[in-house]
Length: 73
Image 1 (cartoon, one colour):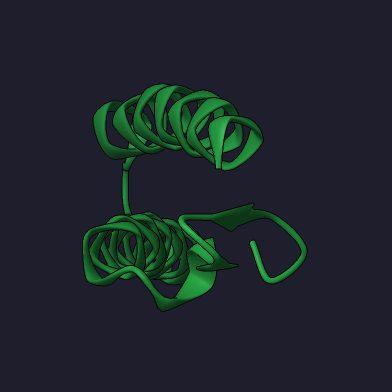
Image 2 (cartoon, rainbow, N blue to C red):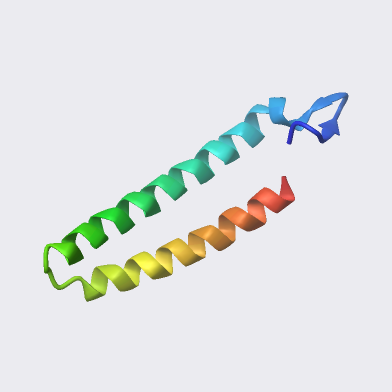
């Protein structure tokens, strides 16, 4: 984003785009935390098939969305 310019300045200075990046980073952290918690519960011998399935589905969808949005930026 620092290399692309619009209206004579770097697009990394636009507040709306920085909000998008912050939103994507937040979504990544939420998925990461859910995955870590699910893995810890699995390590503690809990039955977490539902949570593991949800974690895989959510993380895959989120990563596709974030990758697409980053390419657009």
